[in-house]
Image 1 (cartoon, one colour):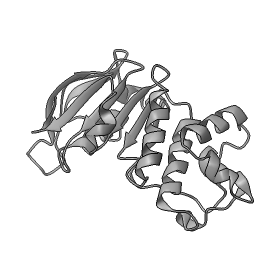
Image 2 (cartoon, helix red, strand yellow):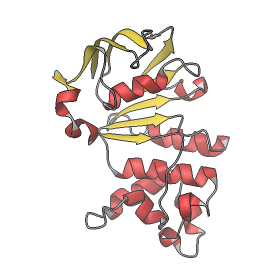
Image 3 (tube, one colour):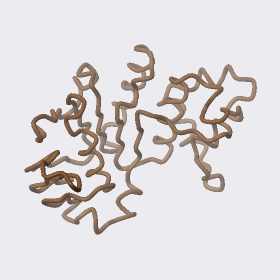
Image 4 (cartoon, one colour):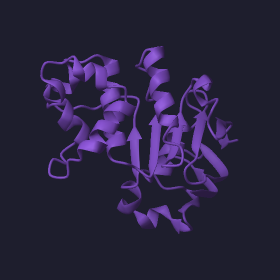
Length: 215
């Protein structure tokens, strides 16, 4: 993935949020992204995922402009946001998210393990068929977040983005999940966006979003 002289400013705002970004991320690496609130981390992620287009420069994947790849680019990506969205359905259906006919037991079990959900689900009478309630009302914030992580992992993405995705977890669970995520090194490209610099110690590369740039 290559950012070539990328800049962005929102409509009606002459001041750039990010500018002159020349970055290159190699396949299979784990990349840590830190920066203060309002520094432009979310804008960077929105550019990376193709939700917004650069006002200057271009972003390439294997020398092809990602905006020309369109939906094919978005299908490569799984995104774990800070705020979790759950439907009023079972844990299983919240993870596979409608892909009932394509259900893959091994991928599902792997996703449960990586997201540290096995023990929690094992203690539920209905197991993976437990209903979560509207918006996950029957679960804690940490349980909801782990389901969101499992959903992203189940899709076997080429690019996996964690956007402050472990904030709702206790320290022990967070460390366990981050440890499992690092075992994915080489299998997909991972962007770990966090305020906690301790989580990025073992990343292959670390970047700081600061003063409209990424260094």
